[in-house]
Structures are given as C-alpha cells and as structure tokens.
Length: 554
Image (cartoon, rainbow, N blue to C red):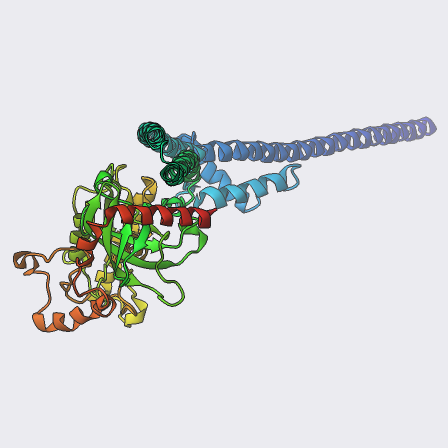
C-alpha cells in the first residue's frame, strides 16, 4: 500500500510537468505570433504616413503651381493669394517640390515671372499681372488706332491739295498750247505777207523759225518740267506713306526738306553783280522783301550741295520777272552766283501760307542772345504764320499751338548746361533744364503730328536770311537784344521796350551785318530804270539763260 501511494505521487507530478511544458510551449507560440502581428501593423502605419506625406507634398506642389499661374494671370482671389503666400514660403524653404519631374521647369518659370512682373515679398503677391499688361496694351492699341486715323485724314488732305496743284498745272499747260498755236498762226501770216521780198522773207523766216523753235523748246521743257513735277508729287505721296509707316513703328520720320524743289531760278545778273533777275513775279504772288537762298542747279537739297548765297526781292517787274538784291555770297571766287542757279525758300508757297512753330533761342546777330521777336517779324513779312513760339521771359509757349496744318517746328540753339559750370540747385541751372524739357516735349509733340523738325540755322539758310559768322554759344540767361533781321521792317519802339537791351549794348551789333552788304548797300534800285525800257532784250536774255541752264541740267 505504501508502494502504491508513492507511485501515484510521481505519476501526478509527471502529468503536472507535462501539462506545464505543453502550456509553456503554447504560451510561447501564442506570444510569438502576437508580437509578430504588431510589428506588421507598425510597418503598415509607417508606410501609410510616408505615403501621406508624399501625397501632401504632391498636393502642395500642384496647388502651388496652379495658384502661382492664377496669381500672375491676374485672376486670383484674396483667399488664393493668402494660400499662395503660405505655399510660396514653404516652397522657398524646400518643404515640397524636390524630386518632382517638372521641378526645374517650374523653378525657371517662377524666376522668369518674378523678373518680368515682379514679386512683392512684403505682401507675398505679384507686383504686376498678365491681366494688367493686357489692359495696358489694349489702351495703347486704342491710342495707336486713333493716331493712325488722324494720319490717314492728314494724308487724304495732302492728296487733295496735290490734286489741286495737278489741275492747276494742266490749266497752265493748256494755256501754253494755246499760246504756241497762236504764235504758229502769226508766223504763218507773217510769211504770207512777206513772200514778195526774197531777202526780207529769208530773214523773216530765219527770225521767226528761231522764235518758233524756242517756243517749241520752251513748251517741251515746260511739259517735261510738268511731267517731272507730277512724278515728283507721286514720289512725295509714296514718301509720305513711308513716313506714316515709320511713325507706326515709332521711328523718326525723314525731313520733308530733303525733298524740297526749287521755287525758281536766276535768269540773269546785272553788270555790277549787285542785283539778279529771277523768273518769279506778280503771277507767282512775289512781293518785295521776300528772300531766297541760292544753290547750284541740279539735284536736291539732300545731295550735299552747298548754299552759294541769298537774294532779297526789291522790285516786281512782270508776271514772271523780278529784280532781287544779292544780299550774300558765300565764296565769290570758288562758287560765284551765275545765271541758271536755282532759288529755294521752303517756307514760301504762292498758293498757301506756311505755318511754323519756334522753340529755343534764335540768334540773328551772332552774340549768343535771343532775337526770337525779330525773327518772327521777318517771317511774317514773308507771309509765314507763326502758330506757336517759346517766350524765354516766362518760359511759356505763346500762340494757338501745333496742329496738323503746322508745316515746320524750328528748333533754336539748345542750352549747354555743362559748359557753364553751373551746379545742381542753382536757379540758372533749373531754368536751363526747364527750357530743355519744354523743347524736348515740343519736339515729341511735333513728331507725333508728323511735323518736320528743322534746326533754326538750317531753316534761316534755306529761306535766304543772312546768318552771322562765328556765332557765340547761346546765352539763355542774357536779356534779349533787338536786332533788325534781313528783310524785316524796323519794329515800333513800343513793342521793344520790355525786350530790347540798352542802346549801349546794341551799337556794336549793328556793324556785324554790314560787311556782307557793302557791295550792294549803295543805290539798291538803280538798275530798275534800265530794266524797264530793255524788257524785250531782257526777255531774250532770259530765254538764252534758260536754254543754257537746260543744257547744263541735261
């Protein structure tokens, strides 16, 4: 019995140990598989968070691109700009965008947009947008279209005027044909009456045959001149179209002075060389005191020819015949004034009054002081209308102003600030800068209206005004002087009280204009009585001179 009890006790212990081992193994296996599942869950969570971050970066990247383009397009709302400011800050810090396939493309685009339109770092928004630029360009286009319409109207007016000139030339040509037919009839009648005397008949035939040939040649020459003028007018229309095109492209138009044609020519010169006779007269509306510049025949003003001198009309002797005093000869030895030389005056038109504007200092005496008032009087004596001029006393433009009817803007001498050694803040410097500003603004306005801008000295040279030699630099701070311009009448004293300098200052200026006038300043009109009785001979001389000039021109 005692043995049995001992065996049962061991068996229970063994069973207990077996169950304990089995339970331990089961618990170990259960714990192993339990911890293995938690690690998988942790890995999945980490992977999900990584994907979430990548998704957030991708979403931020796409939002940044969309808002950036929307903002620079000019259609971003306030909320969009706030979101863009936040995303722009993160993008600049590298929070997203790295590794994206279009990263470099967007970086280059952002840099270009910031350069072209500007980025306001303080308010985190664009300084300008495509919407703003479109509005600006739309306004500029409307303005350009308005300017184009005005230029078209101006061109139509010019074409109408040219058509009137052509019709007038046609009428003149018809008149010449009638005169030629009349001369031919008279010649035939004269031949019939003198058939009885052979010697007289031969002399008469030779005489009138020469006249007929001269008349035919004159008619042919005038026809050629008429055809050339028509061709020239057509060329001028094309050139005006080119000028309009250049204005559309914001280029500076060429000066119409380059295409100016002669107004007439010198037919003969008296024996003393003091007076010249020109083929312009009462039919051309020529009046005394009208001046012309003289050039060698052939070519235009743009071919580099030098001005030979100037004349001033003193007496009108016929429809196309006047006596003019030679007021200036540039070089009598190398370039003497000869029959056949042509005369120019771009500001004189027998059919319409030329209109000009003046800006800057006009120096007629060579002392560097302003003579604008005297210059205006000289122009008005020649029938030129001054639409506007710069009054240097109060630096204000006087007159109705520039318009499409204004032909020239005459630019005087510009102030030289650096050469005066003036400093910033000096009242004289401020005055000169204001004058430069006003002259520049007026020049811009003239170019917009298609008005020819011409330097004062060149304009005075072309219309035949006598210019001083070795002029001094312009002195805009000196008081204006009163100088009598060639061809201008002495102004009333009441008009010069406020503008003229003291008499002591004017005295040395008067002799300055005399040296060139000495050969002609004696009796101005003595040759006139000789010209009247010898008018037929003078006409013959005019024809001979014309024939010589035509041969030289050919």
